Image (cartoon, rainbow, N blue to C red; front, side):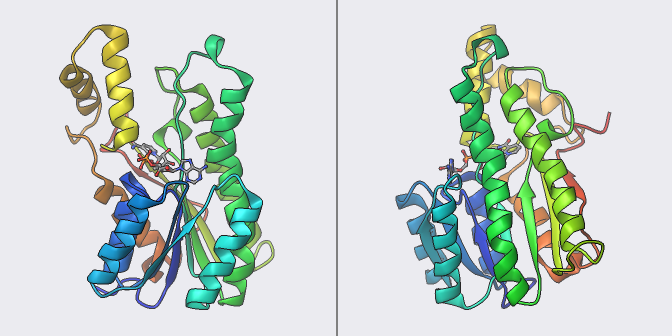
Length: 264
Ligand SMILES: NC(=O)c1ccc[n+]([C@@H]2O[C@H](COP(=O)([O-])OP(=O)(O)OC[C@H]3O[C@@H](n4cnc5c(N)ncnc54)[C@H](O)[C@@H]3O)[C@@H](O)[C@H]2O)c1
């Protein structure tokens, strides 16, 4: 209990999947949470759930590709909670198409949400964190940002690889070797985590290869060393660690939470 007590955390893409699990866990561990998303009803319901459990939370509608929206999110966070300690750049999309079939528009949409969004969030959070005496930025990348993936996820992989090295460069800039903002920046690299995003991939692979949903799912389970898909809570605990002061000596690193998928 209380691993992030008193901290104020923004979580983007908090409508469901990994973002919702992070919001619930950080709130349970004492943080005041700002849930943001382009969707409204789901994160608003999570805000109510957090409040019923006795913690504080607000929702701000937010498109991570909009710099104006970012300014508003930071403003509303400071108005409600007077400080910012943690930003989780979690929002992300996957458009799965073969390179030969992918339009430049699709490519730009993926890189805009997954990479521009992380840049804008980092840019806007740094100022507020400096005023709070420091902070922790956690960027949700992917195993697709570490190793090449079979399947049609080139734009996604490029964006997530970009997040990985943007994270390390941000960590350097924010440290004593750079501007000494006292802001730590790390990336988390989930493997196959059962959310709507992965369910869509499993379904699409099944359609393309003629196997069943269960067979398509089993291929992913068997590709791990643990022998199962991950849960949103598996990732939320990694985020909690990086958000908390338990990781005060950790910056510029990549925390891989993939059941051993990339260890081979
Ligand atoms: N599920 C996995 O297996 C897996 C693996 C590796 C990485 N990830 C990453 O984890 C993060 C969360 O994914 P998830 O599995 O929970 O997927 P999800 O689709 O359930 O959640 C993504 C959220 O981002 C929101 N979003 C999309 N575009 C947005 C925008 N422009 N502005 C603000 N919000 C926007 C969506 O509304 C949604 O709530 C993503 O960055 C994803 O790439 C997921």
